[in-house]
Length: 506
Ligand SMILES: Nc1ncnc2c1ncn2[C@@H]1O[C@H](COP(=O)(O)OP(=O)(O)OP(=O)(O)O)[C@@H](O)[C@H]1O
Ligand SMILES: [Mg+2]
Image (tube, rainbow, N blue to C red; front, side):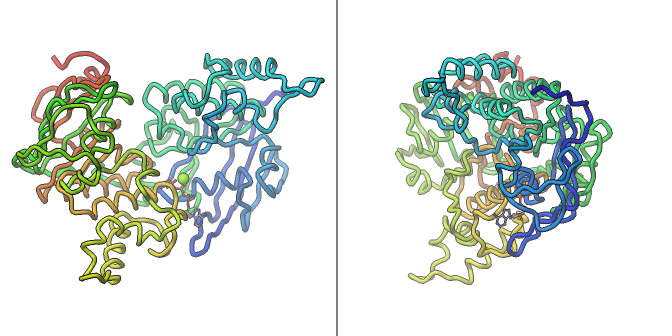
């Protein structure tokens, strides 16, 4: 079984691949070489064709043109089974885990091992599952229910499935987008272990720092086309960006100066048992207020409290100086609060509906004249949004579900900034979107604060916090650890990280 693979041997090669969807050329003249014992980064803007390329590799799509070679031999993947047979496995962003089942069943689903008696051989399967996970640096019992595992461990189980199948190529599509720092570090450790065993790893990410950290080579794609493959040691961040976008981007954080006005939101002693405790702060008009902390610090929960999607146990909220007592998100919206949640799927993007409809759903009232909806206005507004965020689509009446992952997120963001709120809560607003779109999101924040609106931003990307916020609140284990504004000495990454880990902002 154990064949010896020399590091650097080409396992899979794609040549001149072309894939079309109605109205879109998703891939054209795309090339890729995957070598044993290396980690290969795949980067490109939203809609560049990364996920489509992966689906060609896994046999989900058949290309209209081009060739696939495995071990130098030309092959044709008629379906996922053919690709799997050649040892190619993929961990998609949407994990394929059945939460109600233990690890062992998730690992062996579809390939259960039976005893001679015909009964399932759980003793063997448990042992094997644990062996595999241990080999990946994970000490988890195979009997553990997947639903109780964190995102990072669920992902490990998915990777474990690939290892069980003895995959030689493992593709990870934006694996760190829902992981905290610690979990991401664990994942990288596992990736390095697998690489050491000669596995070829494909790593798709919008976080360029990660590419430098983990990848040996990096391939840049733009508009479905191959741009370059370079050893990551020889790459720079600026060059990656220039190649992805087609031009250099100078100012990644285009913060404009505003003079914050009166306090619009005042939160006092807000508490929800088990989530956050005694949180007090004020936010002003024309201000971007950041919330920093580790994943699990209670920032998202606090935002749900303010939006009343999960009502706090105690505490008080004042808006424009008046105590308010709404108990539902509808109530929060009436008080002109908008919330872009971290979980974009739940945000109510209706995948089967058109982009246009999705973009204008929230403020349908302002688009009505009497009882008539003004379709022309809807179209204009949707078109403006598409241009502003460069949502990659042949037309506004395409279904939202046909967009690439990142472009779907842009629609959600576009939808919210179309509302007429006063207080905007952005939870991890730039997760999963490309550099160009990030700048657009920052520009939208600038626009909002220059109109005197107030922005609360939860972000795990510290450069973004320091690049865009006027003030930061640091949380840890549900408590506020401190607060720094940009004039202060402690307004820097190192001090804030320290506070987030439990130190003091001295
Ligand atoms: N099933 C589909 N039907 C129609 N168009 C599609 C479909 N899947 C992808 N596309 C289009 O193909 C192009 C490439 O999409 P793809 O999902 O591969 O991009 P991506 O590089 O993975 O982007 P992201 O970073 O946003 O995930 C996009 O223009 C997208 O709208
Ligand atoms: Mg994608």
